Image 1 (cartoon, rainbow, N blue to C red):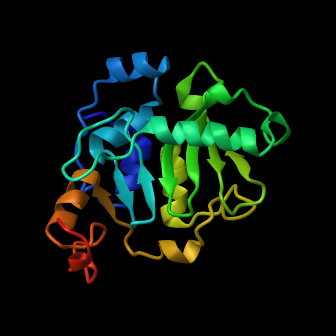
Image 2 (image 1 turned 135 degrees about the horizontal axis):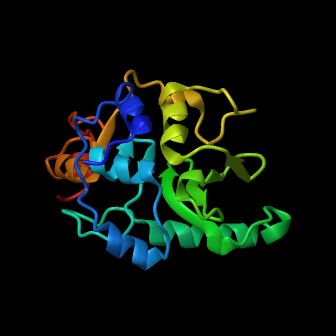
Amino acid sequence: MVEHPGVAALTQIMSPDHGADEQVDWAFAEATWNVRFPTDYKAFMSVYGGGSINGEAGVLLPGPTEGIQWDPGDMAGETENARHGWEMEGGRAALDVDPAHILAWGITSGPDILCWLTEDSDPDRWPVLVHGRHTSPTFTVHPFGMVEFLRRLVHEDYDGWSSWPISIGGELWNCSPPTFVHWRVGQLRWKAGLDPATGEPDPYADMFPR
């Protein structure tokens, strides 16, 4: 398990009880993306893994993984979407960066795409870029890493933000305490006819075959 003070602080707010060590082959993942991943992301993957926060946001895996009912989200598709969105919004006129430096690590039900800007040679200094569906402006850059970004979201800590940074209103995060559910746990719940986010009976379960 990778230790990181930011992840340790996050566990005090959001329990990792429904998380799992993702057992990522980091050498392969980093060779695939030709980057070194931030230490907070690696630590998050070893404590929580990929999955859902409050049923409203998801943290993506670095590479494709076979799921139980469907394949969990990984970075490739959302990175392509974020780079395409950058182009459609005006490219450098919207955000003066090389699109090759946009790398997605998460999503929201907004739907927003949560990314890193990977220009710095030190991945621990990569800021978070939000590609917002209903934010103004569409692209906002936040000068901290993904774990600190998540901590501020689930703790509703506005310090350093001029406005709420994602398209989902803060009231939708009023789950006390915030909950994380690993993608495998969520899929097993869905297969059992339960709500993937809460584990409670799903009133719509009969509408979809398991």
